[in-house]
Image: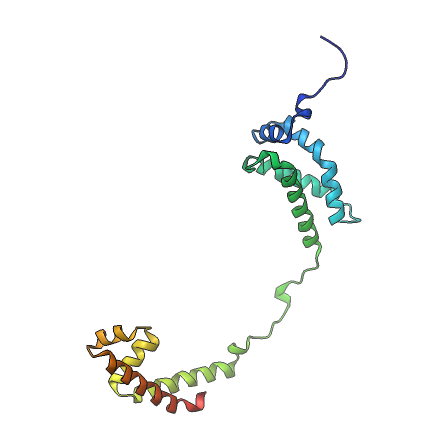
Length: 188
């Protein structure tokens, strides 16, 4: 056996082979990826997080995530860009975590306008007025209007339901709408 420098065959292998072996759980192959890409990832994260001591922590978190998700990597040959994306996301997460946050339980937000007592009373009065206006309609007009406006039925479906011609449905609906417009004028 020759003495001399030990040549690591995995270190010379391309990304596809190294990442493929690492995704199968080979820690030596993963160590090659760490040695190969940690400096580049540090430089990238340093650009995102300038002047912080978090760079090494972010790179370490990125490698932990990569180790956990490596079996899901579809193209082992794209491991370099995949690692860089993970590092970038981790760096951005770190920035987001540093942002000052406000406890929402301490903030008193005004009630939405629609929930104010005045609005609710007005809405109830409008519904009551519409109910009164509907009750004032003749039965056939009210039935057509309810089936069309509340039930969403077509003219043909209403005609079939009430056993009347479609032209009669059109006339009844037109008269019902006109009567309701007159009765509900103050609510416009």
